[in-house]
Length: 408
Image 1 (cartoon, rainbow, N blue to C red):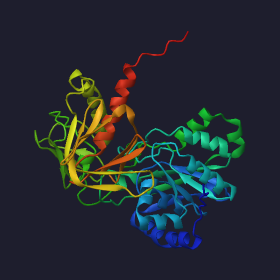
Image 2 (cartoon, rainbow, N blue to C red; image 1 turned 120 degrees about the vertical axis):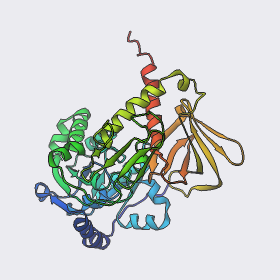
Image 3 (cartoon, one colour; image 1 turned 60 degrees about the vertical axis):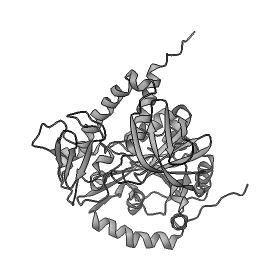
Image 4 (tube, rainbow, N blue to C red; image 1 turned 120 degrees about the horizontal axis):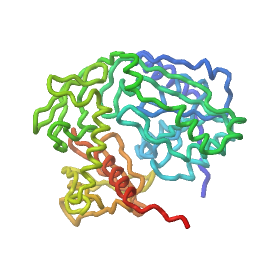
């Protein structure tokens, strides 16, 4: 098997920093606080909290050396984007799955005194607080034994929430620090390193915003919030919410809130929640209780159903096969179904699905029997997130129902 070599183009990296990097600093009022890392020399690892698509570009602004970023392999399926990613030394990684090729690439770059950038959470968050850190990140740090720099972004989530399709103007603070030195890594076990990583990138942006109350101004601030929030707190209906301008409304009961420039809700109706984050926390608990009911656990009643969905299949980094016909997606407690306009239905047992993730907010991807399946939702304002959320909740319900192993 031919060994893949990763190289970056220094002139292209310099060009990006002097053009796109400068644009980001001006457009989003980016403040760089990197005085603590001025004397660090390669090789080293850079980690950070993960909020938006521009995170690698923002992280690079305050790092003096070119960074080889570990990037979702879905970005490498587009020919032109793949050429750009090669110029910046992008390392493809399959989301939510172990990838030995990625580890080999990282080790080879470290041996050449390169700099690696990765996001330990493995996915962007929706509610402006961290998602669980992938434990294997701590194992990687332990094996590499090189300095680790933490990059904490404040304000990036409110600048461009994951559910939004437009940016707002406020501020973004980029805080750089040396999280771990090689001597410390040698002394710590993997669990201790894991806790250091979790603490090093911890940020609840709403906690930060409540202390600072910085306005993030823009147009149509609530648009596409229905990609994230799908349960009405007043009438408890599912998928009845829609966004319009700065407002978020339930079609069934007309409950309405306004999303303001600080990222909080105001309303003339009863105020259930002050932010999308607290609404989401309630939504998660409500769906857990709902899915725990026997009518859903029986597998006879679907929780979510959507039409006008297109199917793609393929492998990790190859070009995906596109099916011409559309179909209907249904999520049950035990399976995910796709009923095409032509041909037989597909049924995917949830226990056999791996690597579930969301791409570009409108594509649900997962692996089933070594094949990648992608459902692309062709209509706007359709939440793909609700499927990933419900699958995670179903797995928690099943896990809680399993008897604890008996220790003899």
